[in-house]
Image (cartoon, rainbow, N blue to C red; front, top):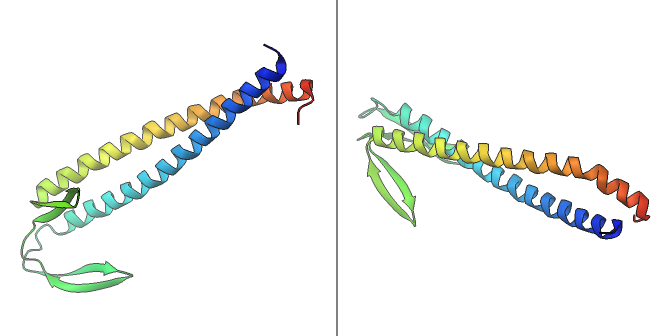
Length: 138
């Protein structure tokens, strides 16, 4: 294979890997948002233990809260497709723990994949640059 074709192949591969890396980065951002939501929910579920019959503040958004009295430690959890089910505080805590572990595994796997892509690109770039100089391609 001549140098020009090899260079073209390398550039295409590097560009494709860079796009894949950008996609993974976006996925990681979304997963980190989800992870933060899960952690917030975990903290809230822990905080309601033993608070039945007591007043508490419930956030409603934009830094606003309402005062309410908890009548139960049951949690209504979304399970997808606009469906929600009632779980005990303990069940909800366990579900959130499992969800967090699953998201953390995904984050770890995607981070490793992104690192491999970046290492491969870094390894291939000097060869591509050398071929560009030799073939006179800018």
